[in-house]
Image (cartoon, rainbow over all chains, first blue to last red; front, side, top):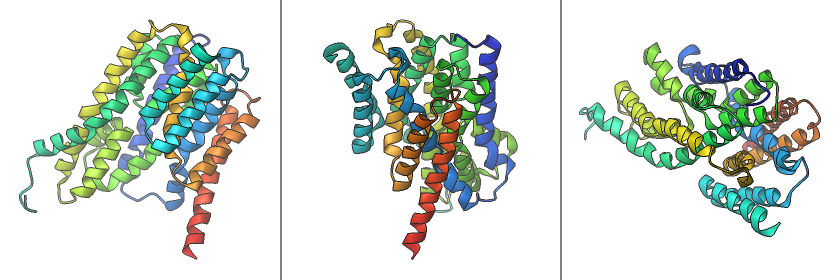
Length: 110
Length: 240
């Protein structure tokens, strides 16, 4: 991994490992058996859907592999993946179809 | 089977295994993909294994990988990747009524193996077998973890080995966006989820000029508040 020292990489891995462990351990071991308040549950419910779309959007529109210019093959692949995911709710099928679209776009069409 | 003659623990363990076995089909490709993309990004085998053994959480591992490819600062990588795992605190809270009475060392083991699939399988089983004892519940959990988690390690290693042989034209850089989009789409179950996702995308694009990762943190916070508020308004309107 360029740009990170070996020590830096292991700091990241260990911090993620320990942090994730304590998120998983939190209510089982530390907080006891008190149920979570309703408002806290409400926020936690939306974490994946709050973080992941924001991370993906610039990668789809401005991919680094093309030097940041939008590229039809990647945008088409993203649209097919979302569309199929919404329609079939099948994660694996959406990934396969997304890659198929990307490769058709990269190697055949453009 | 009657209420007072419970099955042996082995039966519960095997039931947990059987229920989570289909998820191996989900875990294998994700592990392969993580191993391959991490290797392409320049991580060595030990580092790839470090992620899969110590973190065992696909989405946050992919998040860390992506942010590190973008040269985000160490602290940004850690905070954002952990934010993806906040849902696991919710899993922990929902398991507590069933497994909270187990001793501390068992809590630690339960926590280590608490991945999406093991959680889903165990809670579903506890709801359908409420008469079983704590030992039976732990056996189900152990079975569910035993059937899927080893495949996460194995497929990551396999992916790391294969990753070296995949040529760059195959655009593996786009594996992460495709994987995340495929995971997000089925999660857009309600209007609140859709609203949160849209706010996340909009704010993140608007703040793209900020140092890598910091715009995303602001976007994710706005999106969480949006999701929670929309849900609150909707429940209030329904109550009327």
